[in-house]
Image (cartoon, rainbow over all chains, first blue to last red; front, side, top):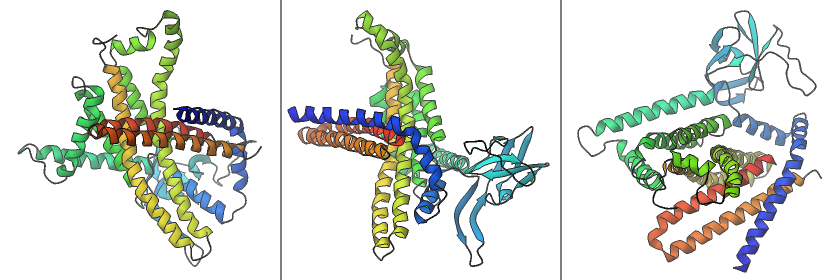
Length: 366
Length: 63
């Protein structure tokens, strides 16, 4: 028992110390990254490649190579660019030629700079302020980027799969085809996630969301492990949107018990109630926030580590590099398969837990 | 004082690792004692591990 307490205190201490250390040194970090871009050796090149992979892009690039004549070739598909710049402007991203040329639309010139679209003059000059941020006009960008395209594709895929599955139940109770794979998963969400956490009475109205979010996150995480270079769930905006839906559903469907437990917790002395109310209120925001960070950070970390291990192949300049890199990458890819499913499960699980809190009825105790 | 944030990140990883390790170990003990309840224990274990991991990642990204 003594040892356990020691470990607890030690890890708590380490956490608090390191968090405060991090808070202090946060601001110096950005300067380092700017400086490392100027020299272009192998390590920075790998780093840039990883950063490039983690970003969203305006075309669906599979890979690129340089020919013997020194010409850059890109293999992939262009995607539509939709801008709002005093009017709707729609054009194909192939006009940018991967950032190498300007796109001219209705007399305006647009330049792709660090994956963001700026309006420029006909020479493509970009002006900077003191902090090296471009001062050019940035039109509102509603483009179908790579991430958006993948989200649409996954949505369509899920629609086709599940409507076929639903149709197969019309004639008999045995699922056919893909339904045989999906039925146990759907039942798992219902029996092991929804009912234990939300309760028999209320679980039905949340099932559609729980199923959607589980399969959406899982399929997208799995696609991220294919060589397509898809990385949707390591875009924080995507996980933010998912967490926002969970938050809105929790807040809008909550019963009066939920609000009572936040603002005026029963069974607690009055001075404590006043202290607890703001903490509990803050807690309602922290819960979806941690959902967002967890999914985003797990997938991003997985991608960074996987790509760094692949990068090892180029850093070791001996025969040992390739087998080492292959072995590690293979093992990590297997682990990432588990993480892909686990993160989808945890997101669904915690969402169900929050919904359960929102509709819980407290008549039986207190 | 330059690399302190990386030391901090390392400490966080140690802390989170210890925490998740303890959760896993305790869950193993619990399953060994009550194999019938392994499903429930596993769920609780995953939730607790996910919460610690969330803190670990949040701090790691600040580094």
